[in-house]
Image (cartoon, rainbow, N blue to C red):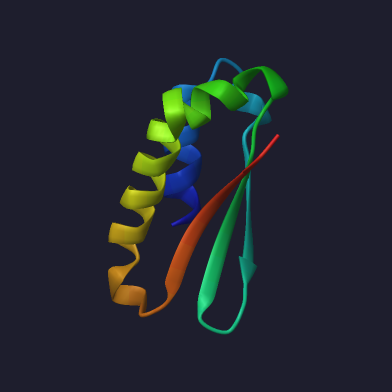
Length: 76
């Protein structure tokens, strides 16, 4: 799942070498923290958050079998 977030993010940005994905696990929640270059934050979020919402939807759909809640946080 971590690789999925990284691959999608790298396809969206101008500085793919600065893309980092870290995982924070809690009881029944997994948070993927996506860190990108400051110039690329707008590209990952998109107009009115559309790209960020789509990324979260893909990750949530892929995590259905894990029986845990999954979310993606974008950190500049």
